[in-house]
Length: 229
Length: 229
DNA sequence: CTAAGCGTGTGGTCCAACCACATCAAGTAG
DNA sequence: CTACTTGATGTGGTTGGACCACACGCTTAG
Image (cartoon, rainbow over the protein chains, first blue to last red):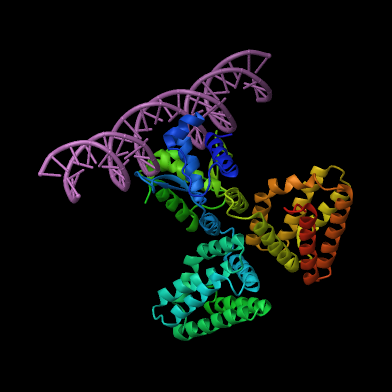
């Protein structure tokens, strides 16, 4: 057992037992090192790992925002992990797109019409109507799809959706500029978004799921790859 | 930009550009530190992060197995990340079980009958027939379900399935011992497994998906929580 | 009462040294 | 010539100490 893993275990134990909760602060690195009878280096390595997993956030200085505090950002962890494994060519982009279709159509079929996330999605859709900048449109599009995923009320699916998006974000961005007629594409995407929302509001989850799948795969087909919608 | 993140970027760049591929060896920590004009500490912190993400594997000593080499274990990264966030109570076990049903039933519906993974699943099933030890039975069960996921041919879904399993493994284990009649439960699980395999072999993906969902949710209901089958 | 200034504690970085380990090559005994 | 011992070499693993930049909050001078 390597030293930094011992620190990891200790911290995970504190989390599991509830002695360390969201927003809580870890002891200072030097203090924790002395407490666990290890070097500060080992403590720091453990903190780095948890930071990369979206469990901790280290802040310098003094005051409320300083020190190492517990956060909860599952998307960050899954996203960077997926991105790295895509870089090693061991997670094909095709599989990521496929998984995204799976998760997102499921989320659409399970989305609750009264969910606040869905109201946010509707608002985002209005913003997209009065939006001329391509980049801003895509940013809103991302938030729309994430809101859709949140509306299903499953934190794991939401986190995975966000991480999949993050993992192929650079990849997808390369294709948006190559589309023959962006304006008409954007108009079609907006119309499809409205159809999805309408299906969910009508409690027609099956139709919503099908529309989402067509929506994503349609963009996939148009761009020749990558899925950006 | 913190120093160790610079190292992370450099390594990720090497991976993306293909100059560092699966099985490849990173320069020695001291050499890499000098090359990037940073301290060995920062290099080590970056390596730790990538190690936790299942991208690298550090080995001491000399020879072929020594040094820091590139591996590809997406399951490890996703699994530990999910497990940690479950520990912080921000990923409900219920959502994890639900996601597992989603992914696994999809995999069953898409499994190719001629897949080698499916042949392995069939073989595992035979081993489960002649198995008396509860613990061994559960280990085989895990491998059976993972083989089922692999048969769909989507690396992302396979990795996520494995990580979900890992994240709730401890959790699920607590319930297996509390079942009123393990023998009859095991017999039922075996029968259900056979039904799933048969549906896949008959190219009836829809039925296979439904059987998988019932299989998992049935165990969930029997155990009162947690899903261990 | 206000505002400048400093003390204190935080993480961020770096260095130098030592350890344990595994291999490989040289040397030695048979 | 073979087989075994033995040491050199290079790897990651760990440690302690030192210094830096930063941000808050108290003290103090105006």
